[in-house]
Length: 135
Image (cartoon, rainbow, N blue to C red; front, top):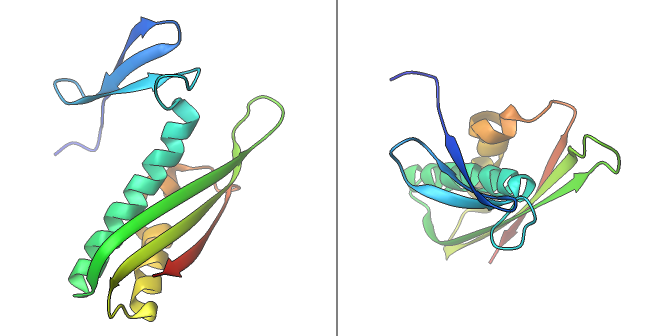
């Protein structure tokens, strides 16, 4: 498998696009954030989705009885252009039966510090922090 990934966006109208891998499923993107998440929100969604997939996979391998996972990702943007993120904070809410807090924390740490490709694709000067909530 090639290490190159390709996506294609097709302009719909206004600042709205449809995008995805060629011949794959597509998602809407709205530069005005009116009818779909915009590009900067999608970046946060991508980071949360990437980390979430890691966390679920790691906890399943650890045989933890995960019943729910909710991830809120907050990004702070610069005031001046380019209005990139200067910090990203994850709030990770995990539910399950008899969860071992140390194992859950280890899964979160492994995702954010080692495995999540999206987080590691961000500029290195962006502060990435998190908090873990077990329910």
